[in-house]
Length: 351
Ligand code: AHR
Image 1 (cartoon, rainbow, N blue to C red):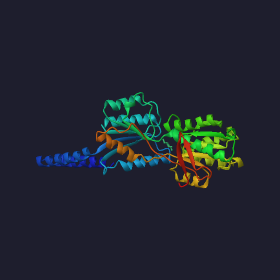
Image 2: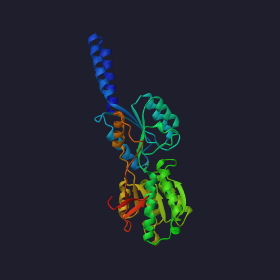
Image 3: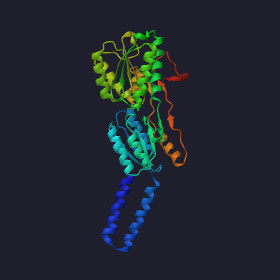
Image 4: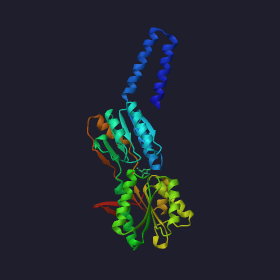
């Protein structure tokens, strides 16, 4: 915005100097002024950032992180476009960035499929594309330079490992776990990975995974989806929510239906588990035991994306896939760590 205002003021001043005076000297001064300012603008690296939307607190924190990393003081001109959860809007944004001849395109894709054409257009224009948060399943991996984000399936497996360990400490038989999954927006990496993490664990452990329904990562849809699931099933005792915002909505629906939310499944409570660890209310719920376990999903990718761009600027080749380390949180006693693929993850009590 600042650089946009700067350009407008340059144009206004130019119009005044050229139109108002008509003297050769003034025109010359105006040209010098324009050149000087264009040089300043040229010094900045222009980044077009196509964010997928504003569906959750995680997303807002992610957008803030990008905004704070790509400031003019840091040498960047960030053009931000909110895709409003629609891939079509994101494709339009990328085409606009190409027309604007930005130096880099950063894409947080809503879903994994359907990017080949527009990414080929960016490649033709020789604009490097960096993926952040979720991924694309491009036919050619060279359609993007690199990616940074979470291992969503690992997050799901960690939560599943916690459910297994925790219910084990309470001697609850696997077949007595009646689970519903309130999923994120279908086709997104976060949904695909977390859904897979649970579905595989359910199959391996003999859990009763009764339904998988999308709540689009929003609180409103989480509430609606939970309400509908309660009409379909009367024996739900575990609700796996693929983010905290949906968990908040689901808890509201459960409590409105007269259910008690908590980890004492054997005493009739409904256990809610979730992902992110960003939303303040969700953290409070975790402290009160209304959310039994949260797998962290770290949104602070701004400095990470900037480091990737700096590496590219220096002619280096950063790693193609860059995973972020993440924690798992629960205040419940009995499980101090979970193990996934031989890797030990300490269960954090402070959040
Ligand atoms: O892709 C990350 C996921 O997207 C977060 O878990 C969720 O809250 C967000 O909407």
